[in-house]
Length: 130
Image (cartoon, rainbow, N blue to C red):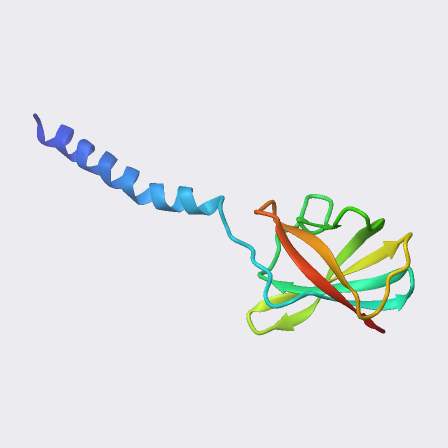
């Protein structure tokens, strides 16, 4: 083999090993809830869920890539997720809740968070009076 052929083989191998770890980890960030989310009620049918996590990526329309759903049996809709502050290294977000069924302070509701297309995280969210 010539010197140029050996150099090309070595450079190709170096480039392949250098890019594999970054490609494998680039599309798989893990967004975990930081602490326990809580819901503050404005009235019996409206409230705000507050939760903390790493900075969420935005969709092309400007909203955050996050979905929040109540468990079956609770007819509630979650809209308008906004960043409201920081807690340590995490960003604190607030999401508006509108429910047909009356929400009660002191109750715990099963809620599923899907953050940035990651694995769904099912947690209980306690409701507090506002």
